[in-house]
Image (cartoon, rainbow, N blue to C red; front, side, top):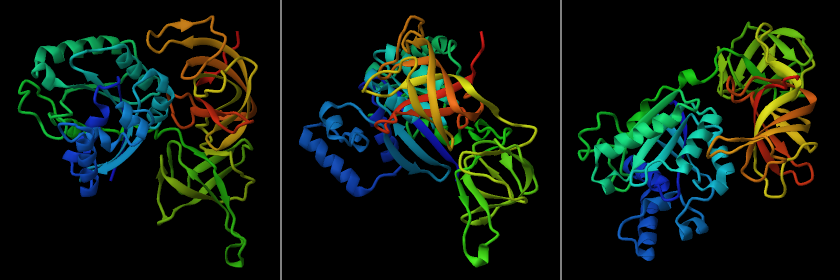
Length: 420
């Protein structure tokens, strides 16, 4: 079954957690003891109804404040598809959490309160989804029951959002009027909005076409581990394990190994279930080559006539995630890109981006927690990369503080540094 990862975002109290609870409840994806637990908790809190938001707001602080703080992952399946939901926080102080949730998402679901319309946070969430190259964006205009299911309200919000989206790089935009509390248009089509001719949210999630979102052109295989059994029965076995980051690999294909530049052909591709005739992203496989080549973790297997860019000077957008200080020019960090690790120097901070207004502050001297900006980096090792907009796997990286081993930044490669 195909897997769809999607992230939810929206302003505080727009109903994200309630929507996910409704999806799980109406699709019969929760256990009876879970339902009994949230029913009891709802009664203890004095709620007049079963608060489905409690299914995802698991932290005590979240339940006390009635807001989402951390990314909550939930899993469910229908006969057509499997789903992983990342329920991301809406508040600006948790921007880094939303970046984390959206970084692997196939689809972003932005909630808008029908009573309030498009607010600053709605624009910020749409921009972040666009920045992180989430291929599909669904805008759920929630709480339609509180505006008497008025079509004019829906149309006004739809047009305002569509006008803002023209400034972003959004390829697929869908609008659905819903009531997460009442269940309108969440799993089943609503009889309260006969003017809406589209599908329910769950039907859209089941049918949205994601196969073409993956890069099946640029063959990329970062080597994660070299399998070399030392037993007499397998003394000549040498396999290279990892996750395909792009393209398609087949036995018999001619390949080149970076950084050495040696070429060979693929002898076999193996999985835990046995050999396969082809491997594509995001399959985890072991590749065996016809020739014995010195290959180690961090090397990349690709096609001779379709290689990634190679360089040590990079331009990137960085989201700063650390509470203990800021990113400033001349700082040094550990740099982790695919399976390759090195060190980088921050050469320059070009600008800090205001994620609410899209204004570029060229006078900024650093990036603080949750801030995003464009930087130039100099790496100590050659980096085998594609632009982030072309391949999210080979175009992304993280920065790690060597003193604490904490992840302090997440980056998206824009390309090699432009020499002035």
